[in-house]
Length: 61
Image (cartoon, rainbow, N blue to C red; front, top):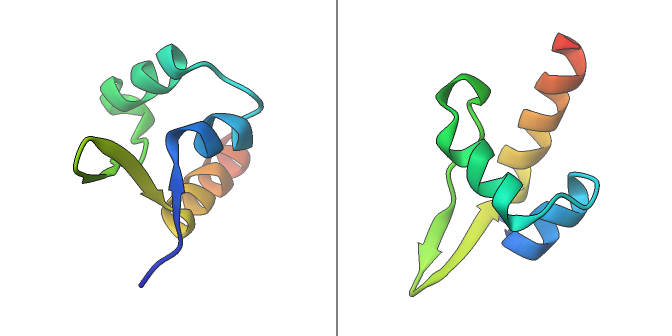
C-alpha cells in the first residue's frame, strides 16, 4: 500500500499554502496537480505522486 498523506500535510509540504490554494491547484488543469484519493470524506494523496509533481515543477522553473 502506498504512503498516503493528508491535505494538511500536503499544504505543509508545499510551503504552508492554505486549503483554498490547494483547491485552486486541484481545479487548475494546467498545473496537473495530483488528484486525491477519497476515503469517506477525507482526502489523501500518494506521497510518490506529490513528490513527482514537486520535482516536475522544479525542473520546469
